[in-house]
Image (tube, rainbow, N blue to C red; front, side):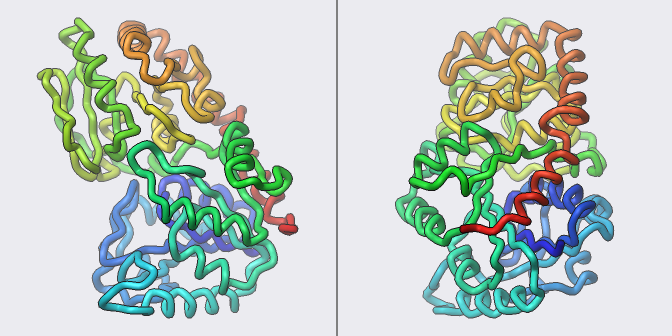
Length: 387
């Protein structure tokens, strides 16, 4: 089966999935990128010298990849870029240039005669691609069916509503999200498949870069945003009396109003290169995701790549992959005392963390996060035809 996976970001998820999926299908992966830099997760590609349009030459793509990422991909699947000058539908300086570039690329992709096209993530350009890529079997994974708190846009919600009118199949990562997605967009549940994401094992190929860290610390990482619960995490951590325990909060995004008033808290507000992130996760006691609301969490799948236990708020479908007391600890969203208790319990119990790490390994090897089972389910979905 010849499959196109066309992604709008989410490289950690997409590349990990693609490596395993390529064992079962003839796979081509295309990242839609804009401007002269693609910096997200394991990808930090300087695109300055690349022409706009569909870039298929392997030597050109390889020239901008992190060596560890390039080694992970190997020759398992084809990796291409679709580059546009900007992310806008129509922009003042370029007019319809983006549309013309995407339309031309869509026709080139149609000529490849893929048996299935899998769109991963969302973008304004998805509208153009749905219209111009000719393929009977089209599937869409939407990671966040509705905006997070503080990130609401009427335009984004409108676009996602429009995309659900194209008569395609849909993938959601959790059973909870499958139900929520169907209700939110008034969709026939039979058109929605649930497939878990495996752990982002691309990080196993990243050579960790040593950086200065405290002796004992818990870790928050990811994009800084209102819904991520950093204010709750900081307030809670400052009430913990263990003077040897530290907290590292690392990630890019808006840190306005976020202050570390305790010298045990280290704030790193910038893009964290994958080699540095690998070191931070590997040396931590655990990872914390104190979100006020969320649909799912790629952070958990990154932590699981290191068999690292996670403390998380019980939001969205997270409890389907974070088994309370087995692979991590759950607390009620916004519950300051619950978060404090979870941090103290995890930090103080070495044997608990060891058991949780072992359980995460089993979940990946034999449980719902087993990549072979996941990709078997994916290939079955690719064979279906949207009604």
